[in-house]
Length: 436
Image (tube, rainbow, N blue to C red; front, side, top):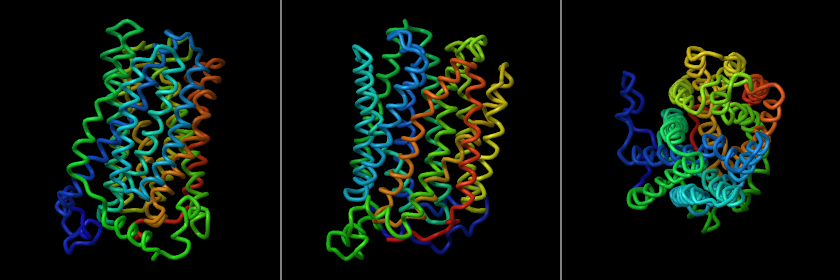
């Protein structure tokens, strides 16, 4: 069972030397929590990205333009925003573990059902419901980790969990490269979506092995017994818009909005940038070019983990700003890549800095907001940013139709710079004790 030691400081905490010595401070229960949240986020990333890799095939089967494809994914991103807010509230009231279980059930089931879509409307409906579940996974998982791991290692843990996104990206890239070229267009993308139902198996492990964190159970008891202060007894979504929390909510929402516009403006179109012919502004690798997502994913994996390590030492804010500034510069060069060597080198770097900053959201938001509304705040700030970013794929698609896919990718650098500015005015939270 989860107990008070999950979040308390042990005598030898962070006192040993060596790059992996800190692992001795982590309990088996904390490793279980990490394993579940990492897996849930990995499979969630895989399932939400199914559409981006199948987009070329789906566009051909249903006769869709690039703007239409981008528009459909925008609808999916909107649904993740609603799902994130909804399940953030569920997590605060019903529990982190319960919310994680429901989100995995939702995104896995509808990913598999998408494989049987008879028309584009059915596929859109399934994708929207998939997005609802995936949207809720982030806030529930990051909150659970933040509330159970030691504060000295909070950044590392959340960074490691966040790196699951790059693993999910890598999985779907490899699956797409293996499946899509080997089957007829009509069949290949359906097989790809059917694989998305595999995470349903994870639910059985969660139900047998995970308990709610002590800090949440304490807060839940206080809420039921009406022992929280007047503000704490209010509906959680109301709480984050009052007092000092309002300032944090506004700033955090602007941060995620700018960052996600930059991220999704790049990542949604990268597979098509690699696959499209050079005369359309792409690299011209064809669908086999999806394999070149591998360096991007590897870079993202190390970027997320490195962010956690560095931010535990130097602070959340300076590391966040550095990653965003470097990303803004790299995107320009990546958008003009024309050779395998350029895609390999720049892909590693763009993945490292262009995804690595995501590790900062979970730690910063967990430390800014109290337990009584933590998941609600995380779900709202993170997923409103997703909702705003939903406008980006069709915008980039519009530019791609006029200028080509390479120049279209460059347009998102300005948003990375805007995100760096917001990060600069946020308070530093490294090492902060979590509030009730």
